[in-house]
Every structure is written in structure tokens, then in C-alpha cells.
Image (cartoon, rainbow, N blue to C red):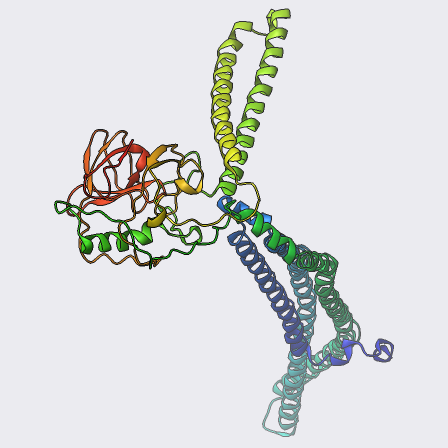
Length: 565
């Protein structure tokens, strides 16, 4: 009847106590295994988030790459990196929630489960031990009853033999009879004891198998069912933890998509144009030079140059003096403070940005000065708050800083005004005039002003700011081969005069040579209209110097005795 009331209870397996013990232990081990699985998943999420954050940090723009923000595609990529950082944060949240909602809870529950299971099986083993002890006691009573019965039979048989023997005295017979009666009484007592203990054992055994063990197994069943339900809840939480972050991850992905859609190729192209336009006007058309007409050339017999050397000198100077500005080499030296190495438009932007930065610094210093002035006024009105004189050193320092910054700003503003004054105005394209004078229309020496931006380009393309007014007379002795990029110079050029350095020149640009004030040098190529003269110090050192930095003395028979000062 009890088993029918239990239904599908574990009590139906009352003879499988050891198997149930193994099964419940396996269930607890499974919970620990699942807890370990979630812990490893959490570590994977943390490592993934850490790698995503490191990746995002690795490709974040550096300070030197701040100009990248000018372009929409760069801004879109930087926005994607930021969203990716938030994306990593959501995976960190997954790991955190799994740790708090699953790992911690299951770890605590596993300890409780082990304690409860131990208690239930302890009660079951105790009941089993009691039944086994009762069974042993019953077996002992049974064996005693059996032994007493045998002794009683032997005593009865001995009495009967003594009673039938005529040779035995009456006293001996009486003694045998009494012994038999005693053995029968002992057997009767053992029988009663055995019967009583058997009834008790049967009652205990019935209670064990129909009450105690079913109750123990019912508790184990309840414990096992709770464990299974807890596993289901944990698996559901495992999925919910991921589901909770999906909206935020979706938002991050939407932001990435919006950033990608914000890219505008036209805007970026305009920005490239704005960033790199030089302000130079394209060179004009090259005029036709008719070399078929007779030319006037006077070469003295004592001239240091001959036709061969003149041809070599002309060929070697073509690539240096007539290089068109799109093909000018960049300056590889250190950048000057006034940005003179840049084209006019780029130089103007750099100077304006520098002035804006200085003005910001000036404003910060002025704000500090105003704040300290107000503090000093408060100290004057309330001496207990502080000494007014303690502020004076700081005010003096700020005043000096402002003065220095303003002086620096004026310096850059002067350079900016100079650049803006020399910026070419858009007009009809200028004609590209040849540096050669047509011999049939040769004119007297004229004064040429070389202050325009294009005239002050160095041979390697650097932009210089030296102003010079040079009196030049160019008498063409022989028409050179017009090859813009022929730099071949197999033989050393002959000297055509000497020069004296009026000012020191560092010569940091490629193709130039450093000179000291008052130094005497040989002239191997005169100024071709670009503001540079080619000189030589010895057989191995030669280069270009600004024409305005030297006083040139050409040989009287070289190319007309012309002096540049």
C-alpha cells in the first residue's frame, strides 16, 4: 500500500540503494562540470573583449595623425574603432553576468547539494545498519534455540538409556531425569526468545523498507528534481545573458553602418585639393627661339671658355636652372620656422594656424592674469585671506609670457602679410619667356627684380625668402640644347669668374653649398634668372648659393664683364 501511494517514487528502487548513491553523485558532478563550462566561456568572452580593445587602441589615431580627421573616410574608421570598443564592453558584460548569475550561484548550490545528499545517505546507511544489526541478533537467537533443542534431545535420550539400564542406581536415573527437564526448559526459553525477537525483527524490517528508506529516497528524489530544475534555469540564464546585450550590440553595428554611409568622396576630394594646392600659377608658354639666325658672340682668344666648355656648361645647367615647378625636388633638411620650404598657399595656411595657436595661448595667459588680478583685489580688501604681494611674481611672469607671445605673433603675422602680398592673383596665364636673348634683337643690360615667389625657388624646390635686386645682363653666346631633365656632367665645368660671399649661407637644402661671410669661391655657372649662382670651392665641393648673397666678378672675356651685387 505504501508503494502504491508513492507512485513513481525512488522507494520502488529500495533494493538499489548503492546505484542511487552513484546516480546522485554523478548528477552533482554534472553540475560542477557545467559550472566549469560556463567559467571557461566567461574567460573566452573576457579574452575576446581584451583583444578587441587592444585592437581598437592599436589603430586609434596618434597625435601626429590628427590631420586624418579632415577626411570622412578616416572619421568613419575612427568612429568604427570607438564603436568596436563599446562592442568589447558588451562582451565584458556577458562575462560579468555569467560569473554573478550562473557561476557564483551554481557553486553555492553545489555545496548545499553535497551537504543535503550526504545527510540523506547518512540516514539511509544508519537505517541499513540497524536492520543488519537486528538480523544478526535474530540469527544469534535462532542458533541458540537450535543448540538448546539439540541439547534437550540428547539429555532426553540419555535419561531414557539410564532409566532402562538395570545396573544404574536410582539416584543416577533421577539425576539424568532432572538434567533432561532442565535442557527442555532451556530449549523452551530459547524458543520464546527467538519467537519474540523474530517478531521484533520483522516489524523493524517492515518499517525499514516501507517507511524509513522510502522517506530517505523521497528526499533524494526531491533533491534530484530540484537539481534538474536548477540546471534548466541555468541554461535559460546562459541564453538570456547573451540576449540582453543584443540590442546594444545592434546599436553599435548601426552606428558603424551610419559612419560608413557618412563617407563622401566629393568632400574628401575637395579637402585634398584644399590641403595640397600650392598657390603657384602654371608656367606660361615657351616662346620659340630661332637658332637659324646668325648670332653675335665675341670670344676672346684669352677667354677661359671655349666652344666645348660652353656647351658642357650650358648642358649641365639646364636641369638646374630651368626645372619646371611641378618636378622640383623637395627639401630634405630641417623645416625653417617661417615655413619657407612650403609653397605659398600651404605656407599661408601653416602661418595662419601658428598665429591662431599663439593667440589661444595669449588668451589663456590673459585669463590667468585677470584671475590673479581679481585675487589680488580680494587680498587687498581682505588681508586675512592672503598677502597681495604674493601674487606679483606670478603676474610679472604672465606679463613676460604675454609679451613674448605677442612678439612671436607679430613675427608670424609679418611673414603672413608678406606671403599674402606675394600670392599670385588669378589672371591670364603668363607667357614662359626664354632665358636666352635673341641675338638679332640684343638689348643693353637691364635691371631685373627677382622678388617674386617663383624667382626665389632653390634648385631643389625649397622656397626661400631672401629679397634681392640684381642687375643682370645676359648675352647668349651659344644656344644650348633645350633638355629639361639632362643632368649629365661627365667633365668638370670650367670657371667663368670668381665671387665673394657677402653673407653666411647654411646650404642645408639639396644641391646647395654652405659658405662663410667673406669667403672667395669660383663661379662655374652664372645666374639664369632663378636667383641662384653655381660656385665651386675645390675640385670636389660645388653647389648653388643665392645670387643676392655673393658679389660676382666674371672674367672680362667669359660672358661679358658683369658684376652681381
